Length: 382
Ligand code: SF4
Image 1: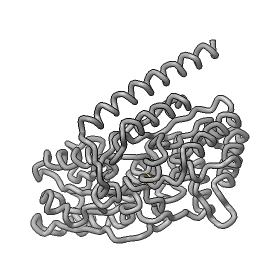
Image 2 (image 1 turned 90 degrees about the horizontal axis):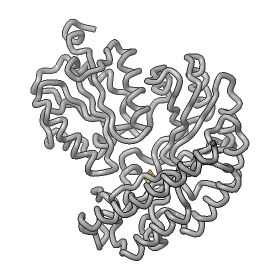
Image 3 (image 1 turned 30 degrees about the vertical axis):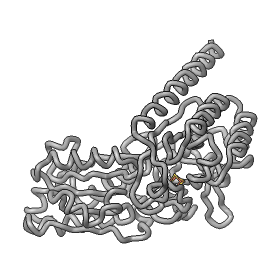
């Protein structure tokens, strides 16, 4: 590394969004450390600030733009993750203080990009790499984990479901399954470093398939690993959930007895508009089976309120389903229109006031349900 590069070798990462991004930030830290950069614990201390971003909601994007603006050109700024893919070179127009833009499938190029930037003058500092389709397997083996005991392990990338409100298939690309032997090698490597718990990750984790190895098979193999005490996974799609999967969850002693199964809406017409691929009766049957098979297992969900055209009656249907199922917890989101998605083009976009009212109502309902279930659980323990 040259003297000039050494002066610029402290990097601070700010991570937004889901666990996939948290894992990506670990991969970035691992890659940069291997290339001789230091990861800084504070932004004041760093020369380079990297924003690893999320495009799922407008609010998260607005926050990133505002934070980037607050540096006023005092640092080298990089935009990575979903916003990078979404904006590409237009990010430089939006904020000229950005020096590099790197998409989710291009993170392996980061050490080279920083090297190139270090020899460019301030005005020339504009590099973007957002076109790769796949990541090289090596990036998953950099041995960097934020937690000494717990590791996130990506088993699949991207998504082909095209839910009409979601940007993930556009920014993360089509569903790709990592090879099962590579996943197991990564977990063995993590266990050798002292990791005892893993979370298997995928945008649609339970659709995993590599030859004869489906999601249930990979759960069985992870369960059999010496040195591992617990594992879980995130995020499951209802259309890929089945009894075989629930039986594995029940029978595998190291699997955490909890399931996150996004519902999104309790109205069939809205589920169709969302392109979710199931009806309410299917979802109710699934959750019923889960509770019968995985006795005492926790059940959590995601819900979107204020989807275009959602009537008051349809919103009430969602409230009724939430009451009927009794989720232990629910992440309730206000619908956020994302450019380029099908839902953004739909008629009947709701007023923000109405979305806010519905959001509060269902949030209050879910809080009361969660509280009741918690107290029932603690009574049963005492
Ligand atoms: S399953 Fe739907 S909501 Fe989830 S990442 Fe894929 S397109 Fe987005």
